[in-house]
Image (cartoon, rainbow, N blue to C red; front, side, top):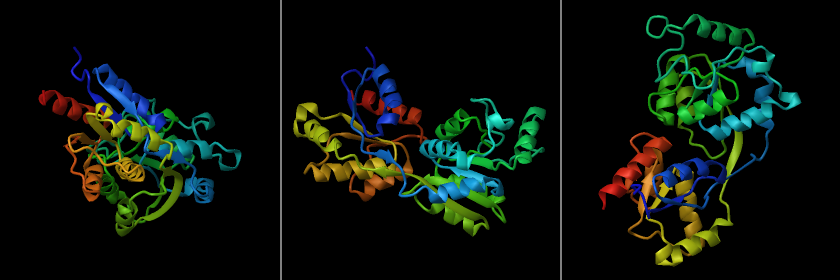
Length: 303
């Protein structure tokens, strides 16, 4: 019998991102319940992002803190007025799935500690010839999104949070021009830390998070009948935590005291605490794989 048989788990991610998590939980025997608490919509204006794309070659670093930001970047840069060099323009990039030149916060192209292969050197040379900035991402999921659009990742921090990304970029910050593409509601720790370290940081909002009001009836059906209530709820970002509580309040509902609150990482956990809910478990690392493992360990040990 699969280890999570008969376990009902609420997934609060966007519809487009929930299916992968649901499939993995279902393979373990769980019954995933998909009620999104986030909906991704366009920013109030694309003007700052389009302006940044028009001068992309003037930046030393391009920073992404989510796969959604990568998707928006890819869409906007391929508009005729925003066209920038990429694979079809002769840009040599890493093949999808290959490791970045700098993994875990080390120096890019440091021949003493992390020597570039001749092929990697050709890639970097080619990219500099077209004045494409180096790329830093917050974690593996974002790196995968970057590689999927035919670009190479140069830096991933040791820990997949803004604080670690800021620390990894600090050695390159002095005098550097950095473009941060992110959500409208993101925390300001990363740009503030980089500016303190001497970088000029341009922020371009690529999308907004919106609470989907149509989720209220689904949550009412889920929580008003004790037989329907989930055994656990997964929170994959601070926004999913804030938005679920807001939706429950709008529906005049509260979280059952015995439901397992599974947080993907420290920022999400602190958001839950700020909202008055102590997370039951926190993933060892802020990845979907670790979140599932923490759920598996907790729910099977409870038996």
